[in-house]
Amino acid sequence: MPRYTRSSVEAVRDAVDMIDLVSARTELRKAGARSYSGICPFHEERSPSFSVEPVEKLYHCFGCQAGGDAFKFVQEIEGVGFNDAVELLAQRYGVQLEVEAEDPRDAERRLARERLLELLERTAAFYVRYLWDSHEARHARDYLLGRGLEEATLREFRVGYAPSAWDKVLLASRKAAFSNREIYDAGLATRGNGGQIYDRFRARITFPLCDSRGRVLGFGARAMGEARGAKYVNTPENDIFHKGRVLFGSDHARASAARAGRVIAVEGYTDVLALHQAGLRNCVGIMGTALTEDQVGELSRLAQVVLLALDSDSAGHEAMLRAARVAEGRKLELRVVALPQGRDPADMVGEPGGAARLTELVDGSMPFVRFRVERALATGNLRDAEGKDEIIAELRPVFATLPPSVLREELLSLLADRLSLSPELVGSLLAQGRRLAEPSQDEGGSARAPRRLPAQELAEREFLAYCIAFPELGAPALAELDLDRDFTTASTRRVAAHLRDHGVTGDVDDPEIAGILTALKVSARAPEILRGRFEVQRLQLALGRVRRDIAGAPAGEKTALAKRREELQQAYNDALDRSLEQDRLPAE
Image 1 (spheres, rainbow, N blue to C red):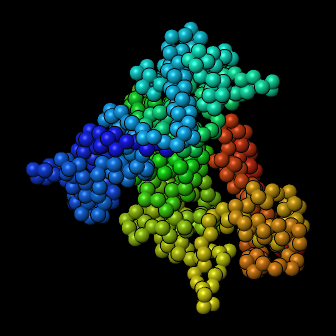
Image 2 (spheres, rainbow, N blue to C red):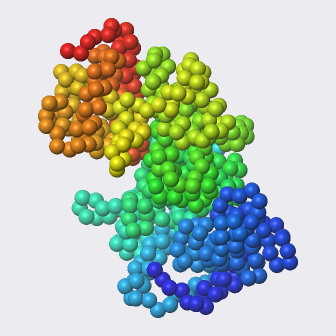
Image 3 (cartoon, helix red, strand yellow):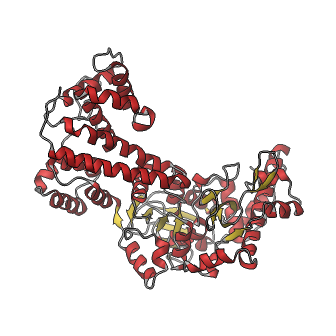
């Protein structure tokens, strides 16, 4: 990491316009001859307690005691170190930084990184020129413009086209004095079986993937027509590019998200372009449905309210549930934009009046907890008592996080209405523990309230209870499972492994596993454990696995997995219908 000269740092400090810098995060009003005030961007408040001194270039909040200079402000807002703050401010205010004498190895690494960044910038510019100037790229131009995207928007985001030839970028980069090693390390070339290198991206529309400062770190590339291979290909993971840390368009969305106090997260590249073109410039792309911890961290630096406008299919819904899990514990409010079934944001913006309609949907976003309730009702079985119990079990942890409020009462009434139960009964059931929840002891040996288990873990334990109740069905089913992938916790995997290898009668040395087995044996004797529902439980387990596989799969594998999920869902529905028609059979 370079160390900048004191004179360089002071030059940056002198160049900063403190009111301009802070106003990007909160509205300021003149409060005296030498100060401005506003709502603090570091904590929630209704009355302004945040003060900025533009001459001294300092800020202070009398509420949360946050304070410092311009560098500290950028460090806290952007979640970066001092050096990065200096670089961000130098870039913003046009100051040339000078580096102090540094360790030769550090200098070599820094210069090597700067060379790769320069190569990526040159390549992005080359792809843009090729998109607009070449005859070969005419189909790509027609496709992009045909989706309603304007040339100005495409140029703003530096969308380009990679030629179909095997060596266009390779030769152009060599001509610019870049080595084969540098071209390969930048992720612009791949290596063949004979060891030779050639262009990684060919006959594809290219989308530069940038950091928050707009520096190109890599590319996402979309195939045209019936090209072989995956529809989308990304730069491989390397020292510069890490896909799980990047949000597409964050460099363009940063200022708008800060002013609006919220950021819109969509799935694809063209979704981001379409929303920016429609005036919703606080929009970024997660480039798939598997939202990562790093991406959630970047979203939280953009704004404290995140609007999830992901596709309305099952994969999009699963992505929203994953987003909530990843965002747990962060000071982040999640809301859901309810898109029409089968429509993505780019499709909507391309229709007459679509931009206005999408803006209405964004403005009418719902709290994430409401989405959870409506999702559970839409996918759950409302036809019988067992299905209703499952819905209540799934939503019990959701309601446990809701304090007394109008929203909680509205959701309770909605749930009661859809389940055809009284609000009082639903409230009572939501407050109860689940029979498969683990009992626990405090240090003095007294019983505590049972630990609430996630819905998926409850489903896994219920399946294991059925395996105990009907061993002639459970033994072959367990033998076919991949325990590491079919079960989500270490405890259920170990219980499943014990039942598979030893049955119910085997000795158990682990007290935790022994306790769970005891609870499952009791559950297996419950009157509602029916032989006809074994296949329902097995398929529910399989559905849970395929949903997790979809959430974590690369784009090229999602179609096959989605088809598998649809097949399993149909089999599950058929098995459930059969079980409802059968008479209750005793366990053998």
